[in-house]
Image (cartoon, rainbow over all chains, first blue to last red; front, side, top):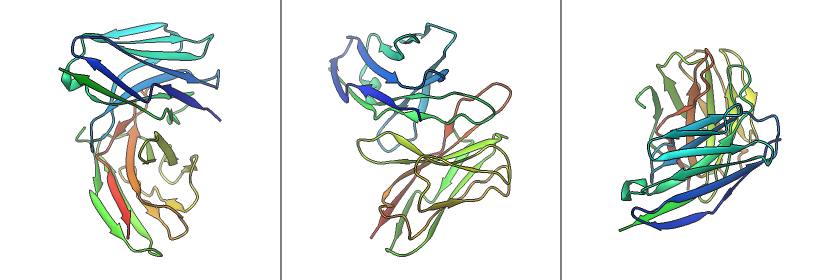
Length: 114
Length: 113
């Protein structure tokens, strides 16, 4: 089955700096790659996703890049703010049919310091 | 966010007892999922259902059971066969028509005493 590895496990940046989180996946058939943000004790919320027919996607301060050949994808957050502090999870899925079985990475705890 | 509800928010059980976690959605989604989250780990899939009266095992189904009698509801039973049931349980759902984004419920924190 699919295996997703995520690095780093913790990341501390100063406010205004950029943060980058990287994930690799094992199944070349995976075609859907979402990123979730989870605040302490809360539910995960989708912040951005990318499909395998696209190499990069941006939404304001957040961007995701995908390298299908190397089977890795990354989350980029620019101009970080204290409210960006949370745990971020990457995931991969084949996205077939009406149900997409997501395989998650182990998460990155991002702390944005003042 | 408000389209998926889980109850209760906190649940305590004694060893050897079965317990059922509730998950309801009003998003008219066909697919529903149960995940388990442990500290320092990502979410792991327990069971998922694509349509009513059908469900499939995920990666860690042992010691769990589900039913899908209604489109809106996908309850999870944690049985006494689950060796380490203390965890945060998250339910999710996703729609059709090409949209596979999963929306999560607020979660149930289960503690075995």
